[in-house]
Length: 222
Image (cartoon, rainbow, N blue to C red; front, side):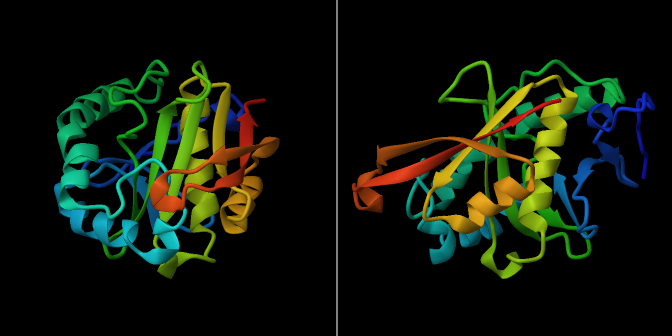
């Protein structure tokens, strides 16, 4: 394992990216040492589909296919892997200096696979990048296998993603969830986000098409 640190006394500016024994980059999750943010692999697709279609996950999904299929995963993950690899090679070469705050594939975060280290299994995913709601800011979204809820992994993955955004120079990261999704709202708050807006939004037809209150959160770098 290779650890990089600017050693300037400012934890928010420390390099969050480590390299494993094979030179693959990852971001550890504080408080849950057996889990980390890692690059996507083609072999993750079946686990991603399984997680995405679990009822406890699917009921909160808004901007993705339902049901989530192999075609969905092909579009969302597989087609981006070449650009991810190029970006990560540049990232590794620049360490511990961050790259500019521009990702090659929108919010398809190259280190967006949440993985259990001891098994290598995908347990969740996180998206991070330019916000579609407020350009100029970044936005984070996430999902976690319900079998792993209540272990601090949600908080850890959100904080890890925000740590990366802060490291590359992003000042403000946004997130949102339905007001009824108290578990997600709680994970955001515990990761340092503050609610700044509540808006009634008509949801897609696959979610009933009803108007529901949605909470908007922000994390502002100090």
